Image (cartoon, rainbow, N blue to C red; front, top):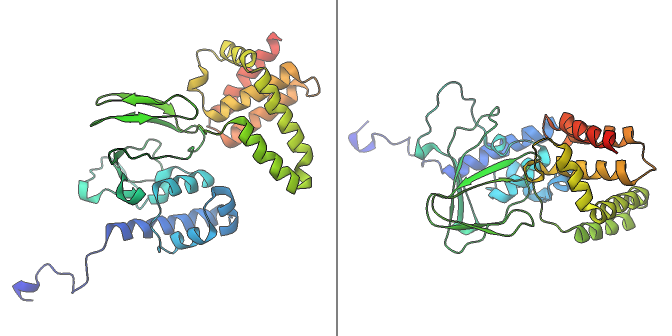
Length: 297
C-alpha cells in the first residue's frame, strides 16, 4: 500500500454519525416493540407517532427528533436512553466528545448531547442541551416518576413546567422539576373524552364516571389537597410524581365524597394503578396516604 492510500478504509466513505444513531434507534425500537407484543399500528396509537414514521425509524431511514423519541419511549415505558443503547457499561467509562451521541431537532436550533455511555441499567441520564437564541422548545410529558434537574451553564433560559408560571434562569441557576407533568387544562381534557365517548358507545358508562371524578376533584380541590398534604408525611404535592398526585386526589375524593364506592375498593384500585403506571415505590406510598386519610375521616 502506498503512502497516499494509508489510513483510507478501502475507498469507503466515513460513516455519518447521524446515520449510526438512526440505525441504533431503529434496531432498538423494533426489538422493544416486538418484545412487548405491539404492532406498528398499536404503537402508533399509544405514542401519537404515525405508523409510517415508526416504520421508517425501524428501517433506519429516518433520524427521529428528540421530541418524537420521548413520545415513543413514554409509550413503551422505557428510559429515553434505552432507544439509543448500543453497549453495556461496567466499571469506569470514559466518553470522548467525538463518541457522544447527539440528537438535533428544530432545524438545528436545538441539540442534545449525551454525557454518558448508553446502557440499559442506568437510572440517571445526563445531557448537554443547546438552544439557539430566542428558540422555543416544547417537550411531551415523560414517563411517570421522571424528574429533571436543569443547570444553566451559559446564557439565560425561560422554563415553564405544566401550567406553572414561567421562570427565568440565568448562568449558574438550576431547577428541579417533575418532567411527567402535562399542560392540558381539565376542560380541554373533558372535551376530548366526551368526543371519544360519543363515537364509542362502550365507553359511555366509564366516561360518565370519569367526568364525575374530574368534576368532584375540581369542586373540592383545596380540601382534598389539604388532606393529602396533611397525611403525606413530609411529601409536598409538588414533589410527588404526577401519577401519584392524581391517584391520591381521585382516591381521596372517593373516600370523602363518594358514598357509592367502598373505602377499601377506592384504596385498592388506586394502589393497583400506582403499581402499574408509576414508580416502584408508588403503590406503598399511595396506600399509606389513603389509609391514613380513611382512618381520620
